[in-house]
Length: 115
Image 1 (cartoon, one colour):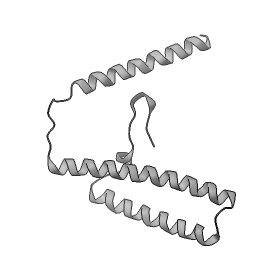
Image 2 (spheres, rainbow, N blue to C red):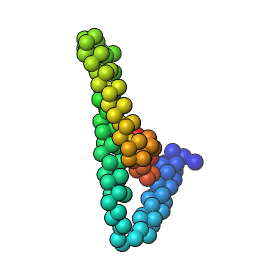
Image 3 (cartoon, rainbow, N blue to C red):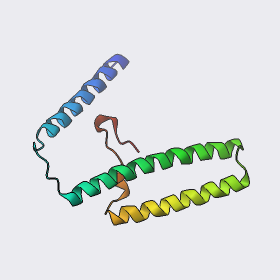
């Protein structure tokens, strides 16, 4: 199989996956049960997912700055303390809303997981 054929086959597989996902979405009920507890949990899940994504981006940036030597020892210490405090608070909030780490990951269908 040539490279072009592999690319076409991969694209066809991705389209098949997308079609199956689209069919699944079409079978969802027209009305959603808006139970206030479920809505609150869903909102908390979304907010915590975004906070976790931002935390990961900030940690990567901080590591790049540490490796580049552009932070003082005091700044490194403060960043470490801030990231630890954020991680602890995230754990508290996940426990409060009954969420696990997997719940904070967004599945993007054929593209895979966000985090």
